[in-house]
Each structure stands twice: as C-alpha cells, then as structure tokens.
Image 1 (cartoon, rainbow, N blue to C red):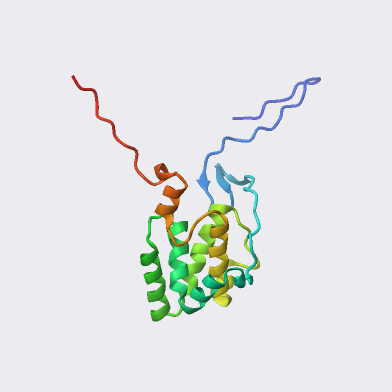
Image 2: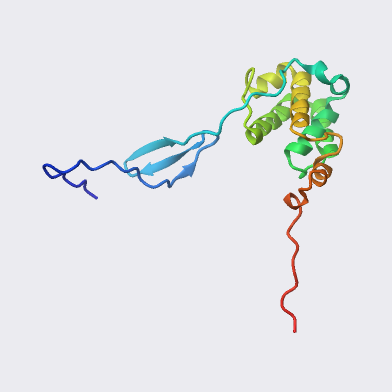
Length: 186
C-alpha cells in the first residue's frame, strides 16, 4: 500500500504499472484504468494504418462499376455491405435498406459512411482524404466505387457475395458452425 523506502546504496525501485484492468475505450486503442482517487489513461500501440489501394477519384479504373454506382448506388452498396458484414446481411437486404433510406430521407450517406468506417477498421485503412462522413456526404459515388475497388483488390469477386467467395477461397469453416460428432456409443 505504501511505497517502499530505498535503502542507501541499493538500486532504486522501478515504477511498475498496475495491471491492465478497466474499461475499453471506443476506437482509441487504449483502455481506461481506474486508480482510486486518480485515473490514468494508458494508450496501447495501434495496428499499422495502410493506404487505400486506389484513390477516391479513380472511379474510371472500373468503368462498369462506376456506371452502375452512378445509376443505382444501392447495388454497389449492397455488394460492399455483404462483404463487410461477412455474410450476416445479404446484398439485397442492404441494398434495399440503402434505397429506402435514400428515397425517404435523402441521407443515405450517413448509413454508408458507417460501413466505410467498419471497412477501415477491418482492414486497417487510413481515414483519407478526410473523415468518412465528409467523403460520403460530398462524394458518395466516388466513395462507394473506392470501397468496391478496395475489396476487389483484396481478392473478393464482388458479384459472388460473401459465402461464395469463402467457398471459392476454401474457407467455409469461417462461416459455418462446427460439426457435432456423436458421443460414445456401445
């Protein structure tokens, strides 16, 4: 409880940090550590941040997707959301929800910027050229095209969806529950 006194001629005691207990912090890569009357903020090292494989305005690198995204962005968004959600939501469901939000409120950029942030977190991508919401509010089509190209460059065939991509890559165990073997029999 009380710090030990250092004897004369002895090596000084090193300050030891208390064990990492506390509450996780949102996005900071650190944790909040309660320390009685005082509180300390300890920041852990973040994962390396990678650059996007293509620029925001390189839409014509994939002209087909650029045209689809400009005419019907809900299709591109649905394909992106299915991959980012790892198959938990279908392309059709996400695309329909995007279209519904677009028709009712016109604020589909808020919904799609959430997925851009989720994608950046999954792949360790840099938040560039500006914040996710700004990119989607001012350059919605370009942002969707960039996300589509990024996933494509990471080996996903966007037309297949999550489950078919996992089968193609031989990783069906990632999405399927483990098989149960029967117990002992006599």
